[in-house]
Length: 293
Ligand SMILES: [Mn+2]
Image 1 (spheres, rainbow, N blue to C red):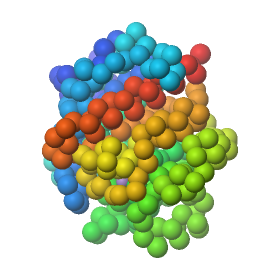
Image 2: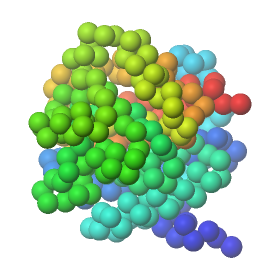
Image 3: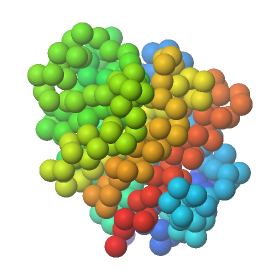
């Protein structure tokens, strides 16, 4: 009596952290890197981040929550078409909507950023807070509408409210679209000047009318010195503590899902980018846990 939305789910993978079926947090791997333009390989990130998750401490000092007690229900990986990105966005949204319907907070591990179009739709989020070096607001990239450079544009066009943080790589057309369509963004330079508390206050203000909030961490938001293993590295990024400080002030019980995307393990021989990915998941889940009823 399996739900048809689970047709494209491979459960036979290593699990993230400590597996607990009654955890409020679901893990979903989405190993897609079809449109990566520079350094492909993010399809290997779900298995790599799960692997390194076995070797880090799960007690969050920031939030006082021991995530080894809460655990994660790891559903496995979405089974993806080898080349059809739109088909994959549909498969991803189906699987995520199933997991979301179980009352779980869906924690996705990409994969390229394009997967977030599917996860946001599947989680029925009305607002997205995106950490990213890039605005991802292009109408198309290399002739394709479903591409890692067009993620927030596709979501914005569907009426999802978007706010972006840590950006420093963008085209004039993207800035114009952001202004015309009310997509506020705070560049990495502005984050440095304002400080995490002021950035968080602006995000909290933006998120006030939202019902279902989704957070996406494109790992390239973080400076390549801390996160070298990404598909499109961009200098002058955020430092990890700043991202976590902002997250710590912003998350509340309206968060229905979040993801870590764009880690490219082949370019991460030290594995520090994957460890940071696991840490972002752990800390965000731990803080969220303090907000759950
Ligand atoms: Mn990016």
